[in-house]
Length: 311
Figure 1 (cartoon, helix red, strand yellow):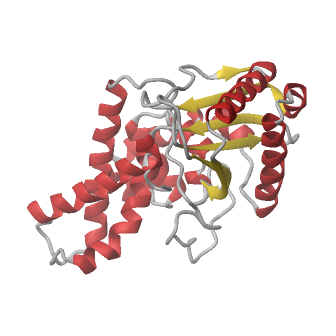
Figure 2: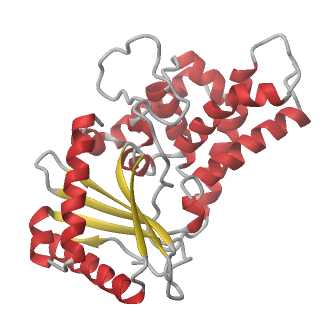
């Protein structure tokens, strides 16, 4: 089978979505696609009569597992957050839901939920093999035999890894909220009110909107000034965000705000026209609300390498 531009276009988006779910970083997903096709050009499959995609998936998943192992051996400065990416009602741009209706079973994640910030953060608790198995089985609906073939594992190993992965996601599963139009609207309204209070430095008002154990996480990746640990507790998160808003307003009055759907939910993209040394010129902010409407998480991504998909 010839590996040409048409073949690349045919498989690129699928492999990118697979890579992003495995690695959580858009730049890494870009590299993974390039590396996968480079491997195909250097050492193409021996049997060219078979479909190419299963072979590409095997190569991509092996490369992704290697990248995850290397990343976990490298110290990361501050908290790690996934790359923000734009999404549609179904998932990543170009993705479509399956043509058949999936059974409603606990632990099944659709294309959109599987690129949400909350899901990708939860996936960090899994080993590379567990992550690969869960993505293939519970997102892309691979059978045990298909997952085993794609990952070069025995079927019994796939079953055990899948069970362990689901057990590690039990906390996430209990708190998860399906991403719907109603949740998106609720999140946007809450975010606008919450950030409005930050701009007028209303600490008490913000604290009232936060869950008691709310967390504020800032990923600067060592590039820009950011909290090196998550800020925990309603009062601390409120005071931290008000302090940031005050510093930004004082440093630069030229700030542009843009609300877009990132990773399934509304998010704020902030662009600072005149930025002080050490501060990020572009960053995203996104909130996560619980079933009671309280803000549980405030996540900000500042690291430039994490923002390649939206700038």
